[in-house]
Image (cartoon, rainbow, N blue to C red):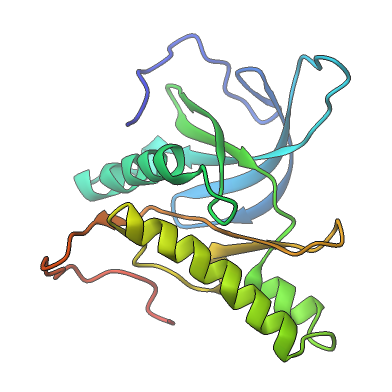
Amino acid sequence: KIPALDTALVENTQNVGEWMIFDSLGAGQFSVVKRCRKKEIHGGDDKEYAIKMICKDKYRTVDSIFRAENEIKALTALGDHPNILTAEDVLHGKIGLYIVTELMPMDLFDFTEKYKYHLNDNLVGYMMGLLLSGLDHLWKHDVVHRDLKPENVLADFSGGDLRIKICDFGLCTPFRQGDTLRDFCGSPGF
């Protein structure tokens, strides 16, 4: 759920709480995602993360607030899986909601464009297996994503091993066998 409002939280273009903010990684209708790192470096750890910065001024409906809460719930409840994005921290300030997650370098759309000449049946099959493993995890927890598209699947091939992570759970919903979903949702282009 959305954490309690922290009225003392520092929120500016360089810092959110204990997180230093860097370059932009992407933007959506209600948010921007930027690279970040903890201010205090403990034990030499300078690991970078992503921070989804959700502007509360843009949230004018109950549905938009519900989407933010859905995302927070899903990331904290489902993130214990190698193919689901992991939440590191969630902050709630006067200006926005902030979800700090592990950093993935690109989405699946950009990945397939960058590596289009290297994709073969084996690699695509392996990628699909990772994606289906994440979807199976959602299904086992009675969750339907409802906005699965290449931009909501993150990829990392930097360490020699391919990692695939499902992200953006704003439209997800609980679902049990026999339920009927009737909401109009998703991305029109998909």
